[in-house]
Every structure is written in structure tokens, then in C-alpha cells.
Image (tube, rainbow over the protein chains, first blue to last red):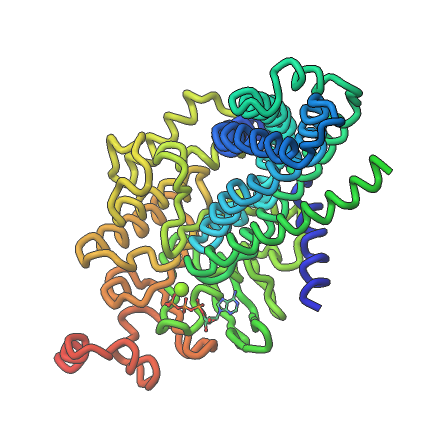
Length: 246
Length: 250
Ligand SMILES: Nc1ncnc2c1ncn2[C@@H]1O[C@H](COP(=O)(O)OP(=O)(O)OP(=O)(O)O)[C@@H](O)[C@H]1O
Ligand SMILES: [Mg+2]
């Protein structure tokens, strides 16, 4: 029952996000501000995580296929596909669901419990759209770029780990990442990033917006936002994979 | 003039307001008083349409606000200014941006014109040189004044204040009360103030509505209060020894 209630209210919420937007100039400045707060500030964490994950993926692949008749470049190839297909879109989105999602839910939740949202409503501003649309636009625009950065850094991490430990020579790795390259994998990942960005921002906005009570409840909303958006990312990952790659 | 007619409101089967009717006059500071939890905030939010009443209507100068279409209501909202219980300033914006916000959204004025208006409003509430500070950097009394400045930025015809002086020392509280009263007279607004502060009741209470357990129990001026034999009202107003003494002294 609760599930259906939230699903219905979420659907109405999403419709409200796109209704009666404020002046374009104002929307643009808000969106740029959100890009900075949500997207640009996440570059650091994306870079660090991608580098280490790329390194670990490469080493694990190497240690798991230590058979003499499998050529070394296979390691580069396997690491590349893991990074392009799953890691850079899904794992990075999951991590950002934690960082960005909790940020959005607690910001909007605090505005709710301190009556800042009432201020917007009393003025006749569409508070859902005003607060959430810039965040949706900012993340939908930036997450694909973050995913691209993650792909690049992940592969650099893999190469570094491979050459430094000596498990895969530089030449073999570089040959491997070019071997049987399917460009659609990148498109597939970027499509997923767009969907995940939309899910993270709207779901977190939803939980923040419907906070009632005080600071304790803001904490609850923030946790819910992260949990629900993570689960939805996993679910949609499954759906999109079947849809796009099958 | 704002008129509430037979307002009923409940949350989850919990009746908060029961057939409340009241008239609030233009150019006056109208007070709604009652103890904590009696439903003052719910009543005020119903008057401005933040809560939809279960039954009953609200009239703004004979226009039925409750039955307006969404579009008409958005238009009507431009004439409403509201001050919330906790100031409700946008914490991510400076004082100037907070006061400028309604102008940014609703006017086509140039930045310079908007800035002038912001400064005029801030001056009206006796605040200077705080334009670039954030709400967290100024005192509670100053926050209330910024919130008043924001509420009057668009020259509203109707001003709603939810406990404008809660959490303030008696002296600052009086300054805020008098400010609201002056502004009301100056711009001939219809002002409604929620309060449980007895000082306000006697200082600016031109028309007082007493809410008790979700019902209107009494209505009158601050002068009438001394002669009322309404028990709930007397228990509320003269709860403190000090005010009881004043009453006995008369
Ligand atoms: N959104 C809501 N949902 C459910 N119950 C509510 C809601 N808003 C208020 N109430 C209930 O309505 C009652 C009256 O609350 P209200 O905030 O109007 O009191 P108040 O007179 O403003 O008190 P105070 O002086 O402490 O601000 C309370 O019992 C409160 O729990
Ligand atoms: Mg209240």
C-alpha cells in the first residue's frame, strides 16, 4: 500500500517538476549554480574512485586468467569492457546517489521544515519545479561527462597498476583496450547515465519535499533518498541492459 | 478586508479548526491569539491558502479566495506578504538576495531598480549595511526584520505574520510589533498577526480574535479584554500574576 502511495505521489511530483517554470533567466542561473554544487564538486571523488577501481579491476582480471595460452592483451580488453559497461555508469551513479542524493534531500527537507517552501508557495511560485528542475537539468547534463571522465581515469588506473606491478606490459594493455572495441558500449553507458541522473535528482527531491517534522526527519528523508535511488538505479540498470544490449 | 466564513479543517480525522468565522479590517493590525497548539498557525495558513479548508470560505475584499481557479489564485498571491514563525529566510542567499527574491521572480525591473527597492525596504525596517551577510550571520531580531522587508517588497495589500516576536527579548519584540503596525497604517494594508505575547495584545491589539481548542471563543479590542467574563480568555490572558495584578488594579 505504502509503495503504491509513494509511486503515485512521485508520478504527480515529477509532472509538477516540469510545470510552470519561472523566468528562463532565473532558471538558467539556478541551473548553473546547481551544476557547480552537485556536478563540479563531484569531479574529485569520481576521479579518485575511478582510478583505484580501474587498477583493481585490471589486477583481478590479471590474477584470474593466469593461463599461459591466454594472451596478455586480454587483460586490457576485459578491464576496458568492465569499466565501459558497468563500472563508470552504474558504480559512479551509485556513489553519486549517496553524495548528491543526500545533499538534495537534506537541502530541500530543511527548506520544508523551516517553512522556506511555504514562502515560495505563498508567493504563488511552483515550489516543486523551482527547487527540483534546476537540479534535474544540472545532473542530466553533467553526469554523462562525469561518466566519460570516469572511463578515461579508470583505464589510466588500470594501465598504471598493470605496468607498475608488471602483470601486464604497457604495450599489451594498450593493444588490448583497442582490440574489438565496440563504440556502442559508450553510448549505452551514457544513456544509462542520463536515466540515473534523472532518478537520483527526482527521487531525492521527492523525499526532501515531503519531509514533515524537524531535523530528525530531515535525516530520515536523506537516508531514504539514498536507499531508494540506489535500488532504483540497480533496477533500471537491469532493465536498460536488457533493453539496449539484448 | 479579509473575511473567514465557517472554516473547518482537520488532519487525519483530527479536527483542528471548527466553524471559525472572523472579519479582519483594512488599515488595522488584527490579532489572532490562543495558546500553543490551539490552531493559530493552521488558521493563518488556511487563510492564505497553504491549507485547503475542509469546508468554509475565505474572502479577500469580497473576492472568494477559496473557490478561485489555480490561475486566479496565483495572480491574487502577488498581493499577499507573509512572515513565518521562524523567519524562513533562504539560507543559501544573502540578505539582499532574500529581499530581492520576489522582485527577481515577479518584476521586469532592471537590477538597479530592484536594488533600490531592496534598500528602501531594508531602510524601512531600520537595517543598514547588512546586504551582503547571510541569514546565519545576523541576530534573530534582524532576521525577522529582513523577513518583513521581503514580505513588503512587492507592496502587498495583505500581510500575514505568524508570531513575529517569538524568541525575541521584550524590547526587540515591541520594536517589531510597532514596525508591523506602522507599516500597516502607512500602506493601508490588511494585517493579521498570530501571537501569544501579552505585550503585543495590549500594545497593538486593535481587533483581537481568541481561538480556543480550534473554535473562536471571543472577539474584541484590547480594551474589551478587561471587561470580558469569558473564562477561557481570562485564564489565557491573565495566566501570569503580573497581568492578573493589572486587571485587579483597574
Ligand atoms: N500539517 C499538519 N498535519 C497534521 N497535524 C497538524 C499539521 N499542522 C498542524 N497540526 C496540528 O494542529 C494543531 C494546531 O497546530 P498549530 O501549529 O496551528 O498551533 P499554534 O496555535 O500555531 O501553536 P504555536 O503557538 O505553538 O505555534 C496541533 O495539534 C498540530 O499538531
Ligand atoms: Mg504556530
